[in-house]
Length: 397
Ligand code: ZN
Image 1 (cartoon, protein in one colour):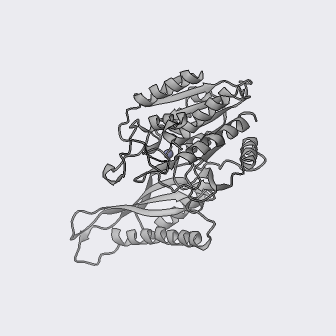
Image 2 (tube, rainbow, N blue to C red; image 1 turned 135 degrees about the horizontal axis):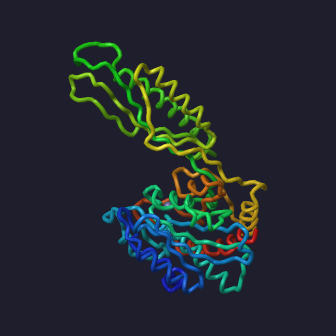
Image 3 (cartoon, rainbow, N blue to C red; image 1 turned 60 degrees about the horizontal axis):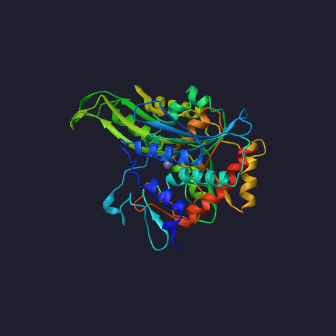
């Protein structure tokens, strides 16, 4: 099959060829690209710029009952940097090889999903389908650098509230098996600096109350927790990294020179709290460790995400019921998990909107942020089929 001639593949290739790569992304080409598609499809088109040069693009298909909460189909326009020398084909060429693999940065993360939404809408419109609920397709900036000037700000604005979103879809991950990974929650990021103050003095003595002794206790406490979590993860093949709390020591700083006892040594930990962790209890545990380590041991947060409820995947969530029913009709095997990293879904869930992370890429190696990121054309096209069933299911709830 000559994939390059397929109109949906052509559109996908065109989007992949826009080098919307971090840092300092020029989003102008993406905005014009979506304006063209919005006009073609008869969708209303809006650009919201909360921060200069960081556009949020919204394409809207009004539903027949527009007073009902709407459906948000979100994707991000930016992609992570590339090490071009390590790529077989130039990363913004969207080269299609003889097997039908489309090589490009963003082919998995997540220009595929952004275009699949659009192609599914194109098909539904061509079939004369009318949806009950309004559909908003949002294309947001800067997800790859934390979404601070994108989704994080947007969900708190009147322009977002005016959309009256009842349910959202956002990105998931590829999965090498037959199953489709589906994400209903994310762990919470806690990045902490633990400062250990101590008695300064000469490096030749054995003075009491040194920063180094306290630092050792703190490191032992955090690393013991790490060992325990690793044991839990290793003990059960059904668990994935999203199911446990991860702890990593990422930085150590302090001191002035090698023969002077420092006034302070600091260690930094990147923790990702499992969704089952009680945040108050976790912080109390850290407080107790600091107390045990000795006088003058304190902590501060570089980043502290609040607890966010996972999106329910039971009969209490009608959007889930609709999603699952449609997936069952297509015989899709879903594997529900907690996302290992962080996506814009966390901001959506934080304002109380149920959101699922889903990128329809089964039988596909996980290559996001990697060299030679690719997506097979037939997996991409099947994804359009899948959204053509999923979108009306959730929009007709
Ligand atoms: Zn992504």
